[in-house]
View (cartoon, rainbow, N blue to C red):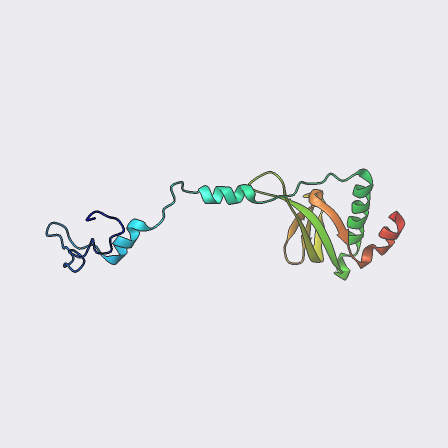
Length: 150
């Protein structure tokens, strides 16, 4: 019965003994003791790689000739109306820097200038949008174009 694991009194002879203090080793701080049991990252960067892989991206769309014609007409109207500083909304595709695909971004504001040679639209807030990445442009100034192509 002495080695019975269910015996409640099997540690009675040692339970009230004084805690052992080593004479050979210095006492470890609570912080250092806790560090022994803290988790560690066995694979550095693995969590980040998993999150990056799980991050979803959209695929760019290829516009047909009709859609390109409509966008060209809308950009021409924007250039003609620059001085009126009307608010428009531009939807464009921004490629992802880390992996294939990207995201569709919508920005509202007035256009500062259209740079034909660099093929960019510069907004009043300084945002530069590549014309080739534009998917749609909307605003009140395009009502006649939208009605014509509807």
